[in-house]
Image 1 (tube, each protein chain N blue to C red):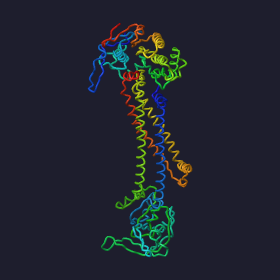
Image 2: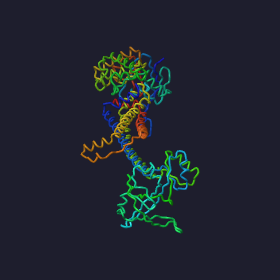
Image 3: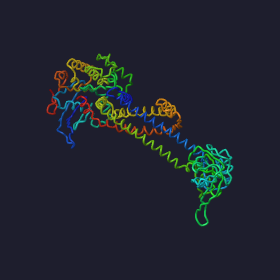
Image 4: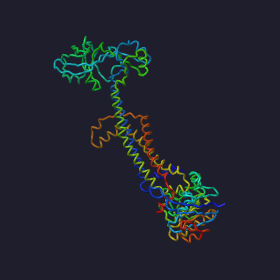
Length: 227
Length: 384
């Protein structure tokens, strides 16, 4: 059974005061991702890559079409259930790492674990182990403002993976990093995802980065095509 | 992770002056509330002192405006401690030697009352007056330019044969001076013998409501007032004064509430991207809302608790503060002021609850804005 299935997804945005829908940014997009697969979605800027990722990750709803998780149609899911899926089944990595600036590196990584119901001690222990894997054990008590871009993004990867999610969504995870850090984060991401047997859906315009995935798709003319 | 923990971090975050904003809001609430408590406590003290002075001069708890009911019958009523006859009527006193006159209240008391322990506790009287004797204060004596030995005349309205009231003059002798602590009493009252035409009954009791009911049962058409009703105008004035203080100081809290609402609103805007990430991590809408709401309540609660403690401490030590200020600012006259203070716990608790509720409403409306958060939009904006 596919972990995630997108069926004829259409997404258009409302603009202006008359609430009229603009032409669709995504038109009849379908995608099936199997467990353990890594999938890259490429395309030029503004073609709707991130929008597709948001819809697939249940952060946004499509204008029409169906998003299925493990065979279940998600359109009827309540806010509470969606929040629970985002917490346990999925993990997100954004281009701008978006760490919580009032929390330490350790607390940032432990945050999803604590929301899932682990005690603070358990979550911190788990987070600490995960951060140690990335070589940032000396940065546990640092606040994000004291960390470099590469370090923040590595922590963002840890945060996305702490609850061992079935699916990891990464939106241009190396987009704002220099080459050296980008390679480091890229390797770390693939390695950690593989070791946890998670599924990776990656949005990037870096062809080299995308080529490491099992499948590569490109969004062109509002449609998704296999490359 | 609980909304309380994130709320606490947000409140005291060093980032972008959030901690300063929190401290300003807490200080505003604390100072406003402590000022309110101190002023109200001093007002309570002054009001109570004023009423106590009046109670000393208008000692009866209940007054029946006619002397028809026998005293023995009244004394038999349960909870009545004692009862006396007295008279009260408007009059004009004239110093015939100087020709000066002034309008007064002529009070006459039962001999038993003047001899009893119940007599005015804050007034010193001359001896008991006979029918043609009066006593008054030195203030009144000055008003009519009275010197001992001058002949005096009292003019009172009495029922005429055909007219409703006609002035009746009678000569009276000066018995002596009295002095009370109430200027108004000293200026307006002449004390004489009991006037049988205008006799009333004064009753002492701790339960005015019960005794009034008992008397009314058998005498439904009788005019009966307790001491609070008799001083209703003063009561109303004190109450009005208090309400006005609450209203004016209430504006301080309105400003604080608006400031708190705005700072919570600013925080909501500032944290939109972080909240979007939290939603992506699995936080519910309620969690996100609660962290802002609790953050506001934390500020409000800290402000109220510290404000209450400071207010009570200031109230209890208001005279020390006043005298200290007198020494610091070289105003020795402040050292002579002794302010009476009554700290009413009930009043403070009600004030705290009302302020907490109003503040909570303002924080609620500001925090609610986060419910309209568009996750993808907020993340996209943060990326740019």
